[in-house]
Image (cartoon, rainbow, N blue to C red):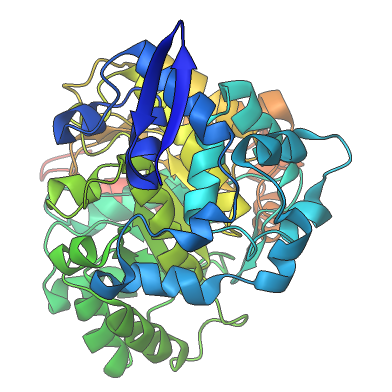
Length: 470
């Protein structure tokens, strides 16, 4: 079939939908590394012009990754709701963009499209959007999820409290958790990336969070981000698992490189639910990131952003409590600089929400990327305006175990205060009761001087002082 557009008497032709999506994608290091990016800005514009005229029905007729080779493609086919699609079936990609931006199209209308749109349709329309379009549409979408706290409510923004440590030292992790709680972080979850995936180590960390949570009646949920096979084995032993974590990607081959498939994720979800700790049946936590399929040589010639959105089809198949894009984590080989990281973060957030996911973003970069913390301030603020469900709370914004830069407890407090968005209602009530915060936005005048959490932090610090004095 092919697609084409003419600019200044030069005709640009694109052989198939996969090629067109790659050429239309805003500049991305991952696509250049894969050899599928547009050769020039002019070719990119031509591809975007051609993409705007593609009927949405074309995405139902043409797979970017063949279904016979890929279980994610087959999943996408089974997820599509033809009756929900019917009202927009006449639209092109460009007309869909205009439809999403219309004033009268608000949260209820957008919610009705979740299963009408395929990931490829959503990726395509995002490629035609400016940053302000990505923000404006995402702000209208509302996706909520529930565990002990409620995530995604209007006027709220949660955080994942991430107290990682390079040796999984329990007291150091506990100190970071207490620090985060005293700044109002942790309503999405308290989630530790373990330095080692050994089952005994994971159980120790799970017990650490669970004991703290129960002792102080903290309305949150725990997660140790071990491989899903470790979590599955521990769930069968009755370990105190709230959230079952796994990194996922947008092709079957990329997921195989992570050591997973759809059947394994389903098995892990059922085992976690069987523990009876998820009151609303949402117990999965997934992380994604543009470039993961390319790094596994499992991209099938599809651009990084389209594959990222296909990963959201995997996520929504398991009714997750949390999903987030770790946007700048893979490095500059995939997102070279701040411009690319900012664009990707806003794309991921919008596309995940359009597909019905409780979408957060780890606003982050690696130290060898052309980015700095000012750039992360810009992305964090734009995501807050766009209604992001949650961000990360990392001590000092510097993860000393994973060795990358993210957002701090202070950054989350800044965003809540300047935008007037508060923590999840359950944690807000607890913070007020514990005299940590007032109204979810201001630190209480007494914080740092009195209260059970402050006393716990002091006791912990005294315990770890070297012999001979404090």
